[in-house]
Image (tube, rainbow, N blue to C red; front, side, top):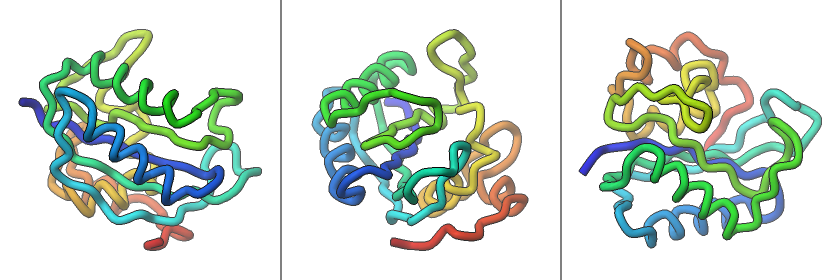
Length: 157
């Protein structure tokens, strides 16, 4: 079993219900066991800011899946929940990102690990710090990376 961390987000419809459904879908996937779940956090939009606020959370999982198979499982759950990719950083019913996978470094056309923006996004690091503050990503802990970022607008849901 390998330990991986996932980021979840939604800003369309019943956001809390969508996060719950994503966690349930992941937990029902063979080869994935959810071992930690952060609280939900209300966060301002990032990138394309002309959209509704997000609800974000983080999951710690144990998995027998390879990094690419885990990505495929996450994309499958997104699709099952109605995710349609229309524009980069745009509104989404659900988003599931593989943030870290057992310290692995991967960089190809489908997957970059650790996630290329994880240390730049407080909306990812706040929930991740709740469940894995000492996780090392890109040479620093989640807590150290978060200490460098502006957390304004991020609050427990």
